[in-house]
Image (cartoon, rainbow, N blue to C red):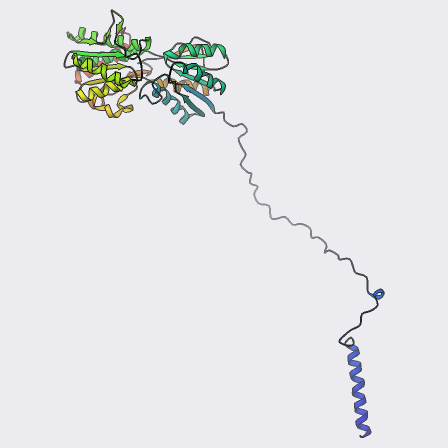
Length: 382
């Protein structure tokens, strides 16, 4: 081998060694002694940036609750016998509470009385519930209402068909003699047989008041028109008449009506709550006429609309509604009586409905004139 060639090979080996040294040595590096390893450096956090706020939007406030929640008044009603859906007495009073619940902050409930011993029990139940107002419906609840009011002077009561007998009771009374007088006049004017009739459920003053005024209306018609229409079922002179002894049995209502129809009556006026529906069924079967009581029974019992000449209205719903309104508005007064009259709309006659074209115009005019004469005191109904 030539020297020059040898020299070149040696030069190449030197260059390769230098290159390997520059690249960090061999492919399998040796670790440095432990003591020579550099100490771990504590990590450092980047300096926190100053928080930046989003551009201020127009402030919006969350809706706030009312400072003081509206009081909801609790009203309890104790029914008389006959059921809450009697299509008459109890149902009309309950309607007043239902109407109040639609228009005012009121919650209303009822307890039905199935027998007279339920009166006190039901009233006590509402006292235990601390109702704001307890409404009792019917003359027969008078004693139980008075006793409860006297024993609980801070409780408030209203009672239908019974006067106030304590400073925390409001009596809801109705001059039903006024529309009953009109009904008697109308019945006499519509009768084709010259015989009309009435009967009651139980012989108590609020029932008798209807019947006695009905006779006075018949008598007034006879006197004014030279007629001689006879009334069956009540006698003002004897202060006695026909009573079923209950407010529940429609069978009794049918039986009483059929007996009267057999005696010639063609217009019947039952003052007996649901019992009268039995008479309506009999009137429908026999083609007779009937006058409803307490509420417009053409509406509450439309299945008998074809026989209902009119109804004597005792607008208990209005009286109950107004009493609850007084409670809500802070105007409730015990120790006083509300009196419904023709003048204030507390009582009245229902429309003639299906008989609108059957009642003679002259008789309609007489009724309208009588209404005003009664309001003006020109005609006495008693």
